[in-house]
Amino acid sequence: IGALRKLGGAVPGAWLVEGLHRVLGRLGEDALWRIFPESWHDDDIVVYQFPRVYGITPLTQAIAREAVKYVAEGIRFLEFGAGTGVQSALLAQAAEKQGVIIHITAVEKDMVAALNAEFNSRKQGRNRKVELIHGDGIELLRNRTFDVIILKLAYWELGPILEAAKGLLGPDTVILYTGADFKTDEARTMAETSGYTFSPLSEEGVFEIRYAGTSGFRGRSEKATSSPIDR
Image (tube, rainbow, N blue to C red):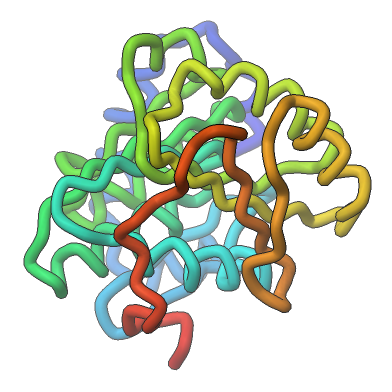
């Protein structure tokens, strides 16, 4: 993993993805668990966590519980900060259980985390269901809109992202936000300065952000969809 970080952009991303998958993909689950002991699983999903990649935390679980409530036919999800890819996997799993088709785009600027997310997506057989973008992503997403945007960011990153994300908003887009630094007042100021509302969604530190003038997503189920993180 350290060698991959040192490579940076020296090797085309597709080569790294394919090479990593060929090497690790041949290993059994027991061997992968020994290599990546911080990995996570439930009955249907195994998410391998590379060293120093943001994985499953209480905040990840909290925002996952809210995100799966929006799963419905045709919903377009955008996640900033894919990490291990666990959020995308949980959304894809919820859609499979409901028998609906959703569209998931995950953006990750850290190269190793992007490789981690891609490896897990391939290992789960969900790589055709999740579009993974390595980079800041905003420029690559021009002329596209999303129904639900998931943000797991430090408060000081929130303002620039919300400004850049205005071109990705539809009339009913909802943004789900959580930040590991728990700087709620600072995050609210960032959002309101950019013209958004900022409201608590759960006691666990998940907030709903909406751009002024939008009505907010109409399809959210108040009854939480069953999720492996609740077990």
